[in-house]
Picture 1 (cartoon, rainbow, N blue to C red):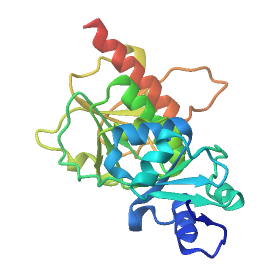
Picture 2: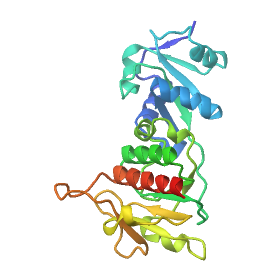
Picture 3: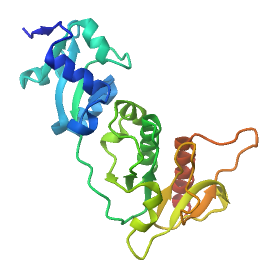
Picture 4: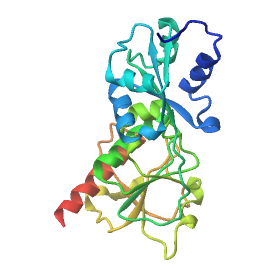
Length: 257
């Protein structure tokens, strides 16, 4: 019978609690995956990254998922009240302690549509990863400003796309263009003062750069700027939403060729 952890002072519980709130994400490269679909996606796509399964004392221990982790002594059983502290999204399902894969540095090369992500909100990061995978982006460059793609909120917003996306670490947004390989490929920026999106012809390969939340694109960023037409009743779109629209237009343009 598995030992049920019931004390909030237990070292295993305290370590998991730090992981659940992303307090050790960069230092120890661990995160928590929450939700039945996301846990299943992670186990299927990245089995080697799946460290431990965390369940409450009343969870179904007969399930195949629980049995597989119990067999390799990677099952943690918590008192219900302690489990609820870790289950920050209130999923009620088992939680997965996940080893974050190393993200290699970007070499400045691009192919097809390569997306640069400067978003500081982990929900926006997860949302744009979901759109990028859905519309066929070849690589995602995580700029220095960006929230971590494996933050629990990013994972949840990505709906599991984070487990199959191709990531690279990039520079800060103002340093982006000088980092490109030479001759420099086309850079396309999302800017409300740019050319209307529906009139733009996308290059075969290009770097798509949305502005950061609230700040937009740096004025000195050398790029071709495109805008999403909308009524004057709204000042701007959510950054991840605007990027999704641009990616949809790009994906549709490929089908017309």
